[in-house]
Image (cartoon, rainbow, N blue to C red; front, side, top):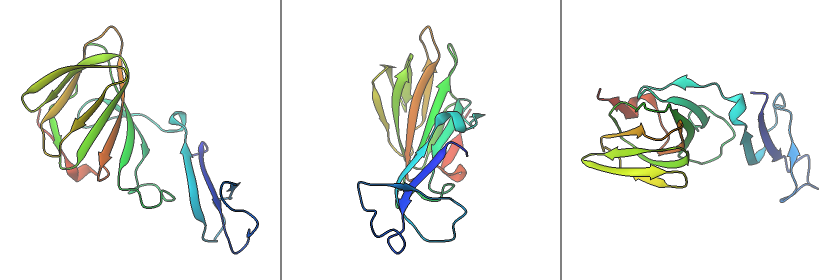
Length: 158
């Protein structure tokens, strides 16, 4: 995680530092720090094939990352190759897709809608969903799952 940065301060040691000023703290320190900012580069996160078949890079997940504070959601970057689709699946958590590039067909239960760059899609908890990459390029999007994604919240149906 060389590209993960935590910006923080310890008020007991660094009383002169206060927001909006930040100090990068060595993660080997055994002191308690109030965290203000957590930054992770997508280039530092390995991609893997998710249960639904897309290539996923998990950027933030409070179940796996310390230093995220009180957030409940997870954030991932997904890619579906041109002409492919994810498997039909459902989550026990609600999900939001934000389409970064490409275009596709979003399937939620019995509804189908065309989506493209700049679109946000809300997927209710428990809905059967999948997305097809229907454009000339790969489909790339962000996934926000709330509460945060854990393996037991997903059921792949295909």
